Amino acid sequence: MNLIRLAFLLFIVSFGFVIHRLFVIQVLHADKYIPIQKFLKVERVLSLRGEIQDVNHNPLAVNRRVYSVYGNTKKLNEDRSVADKIQSILKISDATMNATLRKNNWQKIASGIDSKIKDSLGTYYPTYLNLEEEWIRSYPEGSLSAHLLGFVGRDDVGNPQGYIGTEGYFEQELRGLPSVAERESDIRGVSLIGGANDQSDGRSGLTIRLTIDRTVQSFLESLLYDGVYQHTAKRGCGVVMEPSSGKIRAMACVPAFIPRNYFMYQDIDFSNPLISTVYEPGSTFKPLVVAMGLEEKKIKEKSTFDESGPVQIGEYAIRTWNNEYHGTISLSEVLAQSSNVGMVRIIQKVDKRKVEQYLTKLGLYEQTGIQLQGEALSLIKDSSEWYPIDYATISFGQGIAVTPIQLVTAFSTLANGGYLIPPTIVESMTDETGNDIFMPPSAHQRVFSPQTVNIMQRLLKNSVDKSEAKYPQKPEGYSFCGKTGTAQIPIEGHYDPDRTIASFIGYFPCGAGEIPKYLIFIMYREPEGSIYGSETAAPTFFEMAKKLILYYNIGLQRP
Image 1: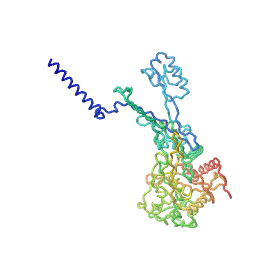
Image 2: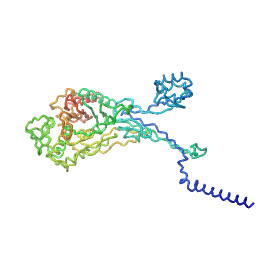
Image 3: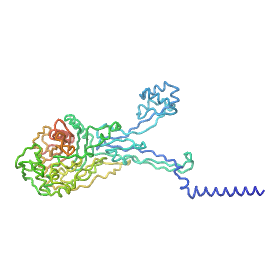
């Protein structure tokens, strides 16, 4: 009897100890001994990705509903006639179908099929087939605006991920927030009745409306493809901007990639040279240096300069582009004839620290902030590191390297009254309720006075009207201000005279009393037919201007 009592007492003590330990483990120190995550089943459902539209609400990047098809291999092997019909509908090869049917259970047969094909498979569901809905990114315009849009691929765990362009820059805004459900479960992962059940609703991605006009973009890309073919160039790029607002109406580089087939391209194909590649701007930079001299009152509109021969800078001789000299030339002739000698005379009158300050005000030491993934920084040394030859060559756009979008932004100061206005490609960003949450760039810094801008407008108009090059493509009755550029490409420490970047930048209308509406930049890399911007980029510039005049119904200048 004593043994029974002793055993019972030991049982009570042991049971009490177990209850105490369970209380400690499950109540007092539950987070230490049994992490709650092990008994929570978390499900995340991705939200619908936001669409991208042009300024007129035309779709550029949308979501398309497709389906994946799973087959019951056991049933399909039992009825090969059904398997043959399904194979025919899905257009699957014999090898692929046979390999799938040799596997057990349910197997994926096809993916990315549209609603029409899905409906034709309805009679075989659910006995032979199961269909799973999914969304994929679609680009209705094909390769149009490819470098602007980017593409949607997959991240390391297989979820959709935006890369480059708008898709990459605004990945978080376009992706939205997933819906998350947390359910308490047992150790097998089975949800417990009455257990904790928390759920948070997701939020669809924002709809982004770009400043890009699909029609203008189409005009630009078509002309660039024509130019690349005609001049046997490696690449053609262009920008159409409203200088008064910084809004980009078109931006393109060709040849372009097809976003839907991104996996067929190399990384280099995705680079947008307009924002990601620096180059020496050459003569298109000269108007900015002239404006610096005018603003500092070191030169005047009627100033003249000695061009009797090359300028000697130490051991270097700076010559004109054609090695021809005209004695004394006017400021207007310096630009019209694109005289390197005249430009050196101008920059030598301005303190180099002042030039550095203008380069800073023009935004050339930093990124423009355009809303595209992959913007590069310029390569410009500090003024303390400029040797005399460095300072001289800056005057005609050599020895410094900027991105084309930096040049476009800086040059626009001559077309908008003297202000540096950041470029933008976003018109609005709206949520599910239609609220616009986009905050446009608002920093407008004055760089040049109205007096300087007015003089530059006359000089640049004369540069077009009195240029040695003839422009038969120039629309009659309209005034244009602009400058050609033929920049030699530096190769292993020297310039290759046969490999150039030919360009033209300008704006219109620019007659007396007119407010410029559009700035156009055209660039061809390594054209073979002609190396000069006046013979390659300028014709494309004026053809693009014609398109804009007709599309926007821009009237003739009043006499």
